[in-house]
Image 1 (tube, rainbow, N blue to C red):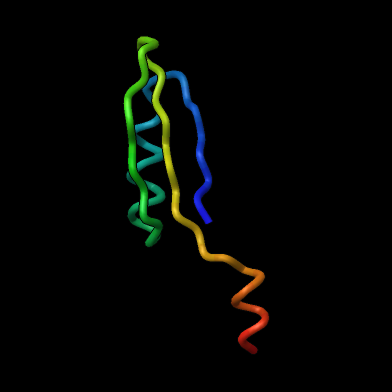
Image 2 (spheres, rainbow, N blue to C red):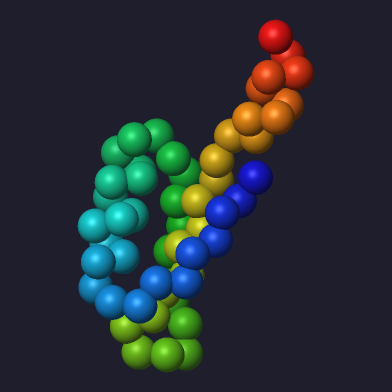
Length: 53
């Protein structure tokens, strides 16, 4: 599953490093609006994980 966040401000760099250092796959993209970023985070699908047990 991919979670997408649209973030305005400079804190997006901190968020990127926090998520990446905790094992999440993260991709940042810029937008047409100044200081606004799209942050895509790949997270585990907890539903399919619980079905495996």
